[in-house]
Amino acid sequence: MPVPEERLRALEKTAAKRATEYHVVGWNGLPPLDVLGPFAHLHTLMDADVPTGELSREPVVYEAERVLRGQERLVEQGYGLVTTLIRDQDDSPVGYTTMCVMGGDNQDVLQDNTFVLRSRRGRGLGMLSKLSNLRLLSEHHPHVRHVHTWTAEDNDAMRAVNQRLGFCPVETMYQLERALDRSARRGIGGGVLRRLVRDRPRPHQSGSGTRPAFSGERRPMVWPACLRGSPG
Image (cartoon, rainbow, N blue to C red; front, top):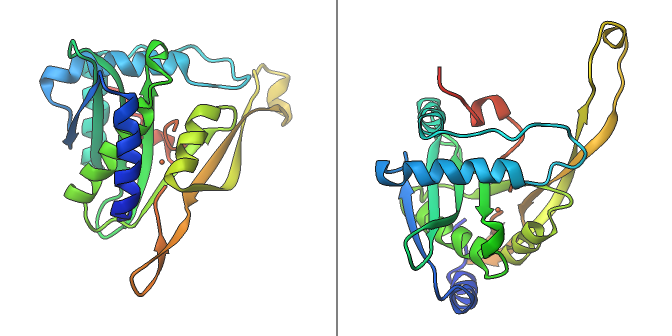
């Protein structure tokens, strides 16, 4: 960060041609109350739709109160929140993306969820939302320099978007699952059920020196306890 202006404009021009029937609404901080209900519903749909490999897990239902409390907790912990919501011609929300800005003098940003309704995919809306969010990020948090993302290895569509934006993979994280009973607790075991690839900025030349471009899907997995809260 900041992303080169020529790169942003070229990608925005392409995205606009594909998403002629959609527009974006963005905010810095907590979600406006008038979008909270639909915003929460998109969280529920994403949790049911996101690639999970072979993990056995039940999708979570996100009520408006739960989403708001989770975002309030992030703010209380010092994170800045930058979000873009995609709407169609009827003003119905069809997707969103969120970034978590590290607090204090930290120059790092964690890409949180990015989601587009399955029925609206193939129109460049994921790219459109991320480009809009990068504009908001530069406007409200001009000090940041790096954005990091975690994406399921089998999420080919999102990884393709990230690659076009300039991401490059730096490591793979494995998630393990094991059903525990009394006998199982005596030992350690389990198979690899899901692989997530962490991407980082791809360096680019700008001005007098070299600096990272930026990086951007599934929620970051490094500190899941603080990145996904629940009320109470």
